[in-house]
Figure (cartoon, rainbow, N blue to C red):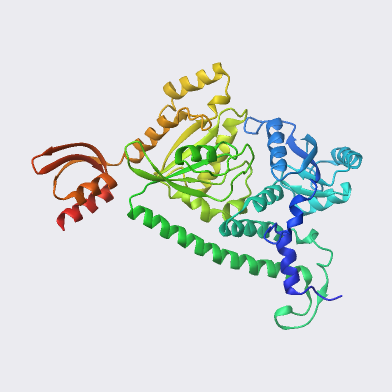
Length: 457
C-alpha cells in the first residue's frame, strides 16, 4: 500500500481539524451521539478553584451546545495524578462499566488530556474520548459562519491536532523512500503529515494577517470619523448578545446557549447626547480557554485591545459569577487589554438582575450604588431593559471624559462648521447673538486639533 495522495491527506487533516466546510447536508440530521461528561476535580479544594458542581454543569452545557445526548454526567475526584489515564484505575473501571451498560459512544473529559492519556482511555472504554479543548474546538467549528471565523477555528484545530497525530491514523509509521516534494528517504508518514499540517498553518496565518490589516484599516477609518469603540466582553452565556441587541437594535442570535455567537459583530449606536459610537459583540470567554485558541482569535480580539471602553458583561445570577469574572479578566490581561500600562477604561454591566430573588437584587443594587466598586459596576437586565439607559449615560460620560469643554464663536452663515461641531464634539450649550453662534463644546485633543486646522483654513 502506498502513501496517501496529498489531496486526500489534506481532506483528512481538515476533517480531523474540525473544518465543517465540507459537511454533507445529510450529516446535519444525524442522531445525537450518546455521551458521558466527566469533570475531574482535586479532592482537596482551595479558594482559587471553581465549584466542582458548577464546573460539571458548564461542561454539560458545552456538550449540549452541539446537540450531544448527555446520558451520564459525573464529577470525578482526583487524589493523585495518574500520568497514564489522569483519572486513576478505579475511576476508569467504574466509567467502563457505565459506558458498556448505557451504550455510550463518546466520553468528554472536562480537563486537558495528553495524546497518550486520550489513547489509553479510548482503549480502556472502547469509545471515542475528547478533552475540554477538543470539545470547545468542536463547538467553534459548528458556530463559525464567516470566512475569518472558519480560518481562526481551523488554525486552532490544526495546531491542536498536530501534537496528536500519534493517535489519529494507523498508517503514520510507514516509511517511504523517494525524492522531491513527496519526502526524502526514510521519511515516515507522520513526518509527512506534520509537514502538510505545518504548510497549511503557515497559509492560514498569512490569510489572517490580511484580515488583521483590514481590521487595522477599518479602525483608522473609524478614528478619522471620530467614532469611539465600545467592546462588550464576558463569559459565554453572560448575555452579551442580548445586551448588544438591546443597545443597537440589531438581531444578533442570542440564546441561552454556550457560545451561541462566535463571529464578532459591530454596529454604530447613538448615545443620549446625540453622538455616535461603535459597539462590538465579541466571542464569549470560558475558563481554561486553550492558549492556542486565544492566539488563533487574536485578530478578532484585537478589537477589544483597541477599544476606547470595555464593558464586561457579567451574569450575576450565576452561582459561580465571581470566578467567571476572574477567568475573563485573566484572558483580558493575557491580551494586554487591561492591567499595568493600559489606559482603556473597564466597567461591569451586572446583567440578569431580573433573575435574582428580591432580597439578593436589593443587596446587589445597594452595593453597586454605595460600595467600593460603585463607579464601575452597573446593574442591568438586557432582557427587560432595566438599567440600560443608565449604562448608556455612563458610557457617554466615560467616552467624553477626556474631552475639554471650550467656548467657540462661529458665524451663523458657516453652517458647515456648526454642523461639524455637532457631529464631532459634545455641544453642551448654544446661544445665538446676532450673526454669531456661541457654543460650549467638549472636544478631545485630536478633534480640537482638527477644529483648529478647519478654522485656520
